[in-house]
Amino acid sequence: MAGLTKNKNSVAAAWVAVVLAILGALMLYPIGVPALNCAFVIVKICMVSGLLIYILSSNQDAGFNLWLVASIAAVVMTAIKWGSSVSPDVWEIILYLGSMVVDLGMPALVHHLSGGKG
Image (cartoon, rainbow, N blue to C red; front, side, top):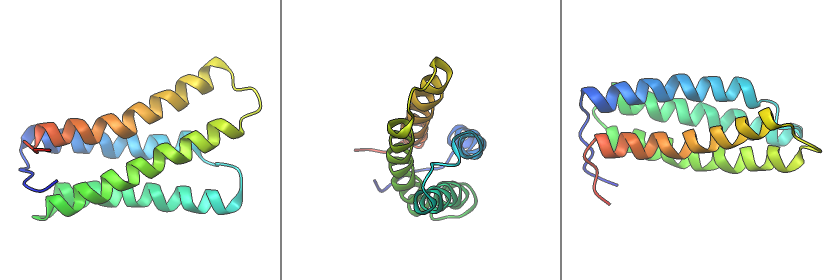
């Protein structure tokens, strides 16, 4: 995933992703089990840190890769939370699915806007 080039559009999308990552953390926390709650917080910190590295540093590839790995972990954490729900209502299901789409879609969008190949 090398060769990303930051531009106005990719940076704007990354700032939107920062906001969405923070909102997702607030809406989905807690996962349930204390160890998973700690892992969830660490994953969200890595997501935001990766985004900030992408946005603010000259090493956008490292920031993007950190964000991408954390986003994949966030999808796993969301699936765990969804799986532990006894009988989620329609709004919870929408929240879970929406979170997963955002966690996978925003890195794809930023990668595309950054001109990434592969």
